[in-house]
Length: 257
Image 1 (cartoon, rainbow, N blue to C red):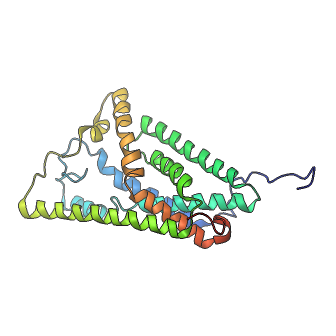
Image 2: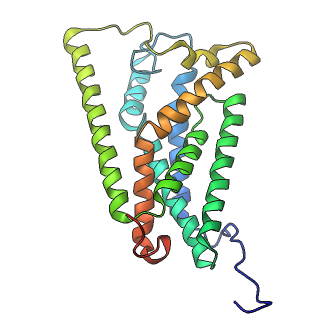
Image 3: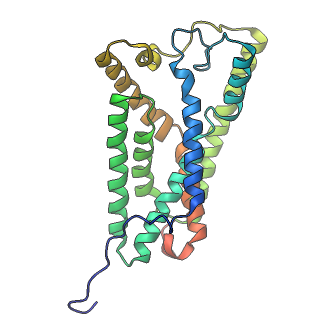
């Protein structure tokens, strides 16, 4: 760069005409389904099963809706959202590289965005919803950006495969537990979930409800996020897909594996 020549300029957000509509539409659809999945949480004061928040009473229509949510929505939406989040991390890095900026700038942008996600998640949990996942995605984004965004496609796939094996094992244990309940019988009423999980939904005092939400939020950030495995695996696969679409920009050839 010659003297007086301006350096690479920071990359701002894309305009409406430049944005690809498919990821935005997919994110919107996932958010709608996440909202549907969370609605049973607010049906407090009702006996629910050991497996979740869905009440065990209700009309036949209620049971049909519950079955549809359990089969097609519950615990099935947020991995897709995490995939899109991981894809977005790699795209942000690509855009910074295409603008001529150093890799350190791209990582600074990603770090700042993920820290803001954690901050927004904290406020969201304090004021509205203890099951907030913004903090979970922000923490996963911080850790995975640091550990994996410079890595090779092979490394991303290997770690994704290892995480998938663990998830499969968890699923097998869950199926065995369901089979044991059906065959041997087990409690349905009473709700086996810890009291603090649902306490904020029925609390009448705003300060008590806020405290209950803040007690729940760290478990969501760590349990459903970083330690839940599904979100990190989906994010890694999203990064891998972005690498495959732009292999020469998203990561440097010959990067560490």
